[in-house]
Length: 139
Image (tube, rainbow, N blue to C red; front, side, top):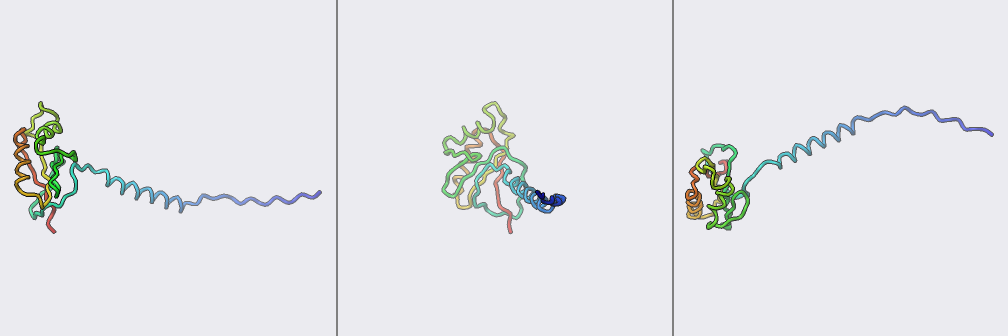
């Protein structure tokens, strides 16, 4: 009986180029997904443009009024009647000094001025005194 000769085994190598491609893909994926983790307290609306607008720091509360005149406090839908109560609850309750709370008004360009003033009036009734109006940068 004659046995076949064993074939000589080739030495295995680790190919590094596919590994580099995979690592690069993961890096890009995590970089892009981290952009989606930014904290937004409002819905996107069509903001008015301002040439002299300044960047604001992180804010405590955001009132958003969309083009259909729906009012939101930090993405929670509210009515004008319970806006003050919701602002007090979101700021930390009735024992919190609301004069230090920053309130950003994120209002669509087509919303009537009277509704914006009504929202500000409700906020003033509960003690909020610091307002900022969100604008888009002028091109």
